[in-house]
Amino acid sequence: MSNHKNPVIAPSLLGADFSNLKKEINFCNNSNAKWLHLDIMDQQFVPNLSFGPSVVKDLRKHSDLFFDVHLMVSNPFDMLLPFIKAGANGISFHIEATESRFTFPPKILINTIKKNNLKCGLALKPKTPFSIIKKYLEHIDYIVVMSVEPGFGGQSFIPSTLDKISEIDNYLNQNNIRENILIQVDGGIKLENYKSVIESGADILVAGSQVFQSENPIETINQMYSK
Image 1 (spheres, rainbow, N blue to C red):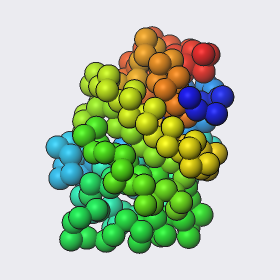
Image 2 (image 1 turned 45 degrees about the horizontal axis):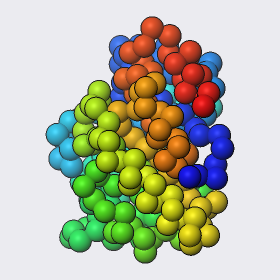
Image 3 (image 1 turned 180 degrees about the horizontal axis):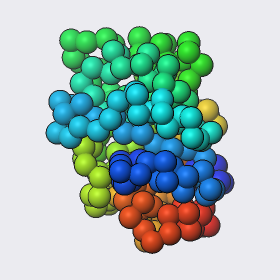
Image 4 (image 1 turned 60 degrees about the vertical axis):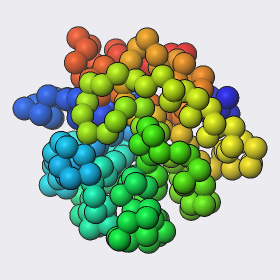
C-alpha cells in the first residue's frame, strides 16, 4: 500500500463540456482539486482527436492548477515544446509511442521535459507490462497507469489494473524509490471504485466523466478526497 496518505484528484478535461470550458475549469478551481488532466490525442496513436496547445494556453489564464498534459500521440517529441510554452506543469508520454520505434528514444523526451523544469511521467497502456519502464524510473516523477484503453472517455475501469498498481507500488517500495515517484491512474475512476484504487497504491486519480457529468462537479471532486 502507498505511503502517500493524501491522493490528488485530477479532473480530466476530456469529460467536460467544451462549449463552456471556462465554467468547467472554474468547477475545478473552486474544488479541492490540485491538478487538471489534459488529454492530447492525435487520431494516430489513438482513434480520437482532442485539442492542442492553444487551448491549453487559453486555459492557463483562468487557472493556477497543476496542468498535467498527457500526450497520447504517435510523435510526442514534436509536441513537447509547444505544450511547455502553453503552460504545462507536467507532461507524460506513452512508452509505446517511443520504445522500440523509429523515433526519439524515451530518454531524450525525459531530458527535454526535465530541463524545462517540468514534472515528467511515463504512461502505460493496460496491456503494457510495468517492466518495460523500470530502466527509466530514476529519471521520472510519475507513472501513468491506464485503466482503460486510451482514446475515449467514459469507459469502464479494467479490474486487473488494481493488481498492476499494487505491483508497481510494491516494486517502488522494495527499491526505496517510492517517495520519489507517484502513481497516477487514468480511466474509469468512479465514486464506487476510487477507494479501492487508492488502497492499491494510487497517488493521483484522473476522473473525467464522473466529475463533469455529475450534477455537482465540485462536490464530486471533494467527495473523492474523503477516504
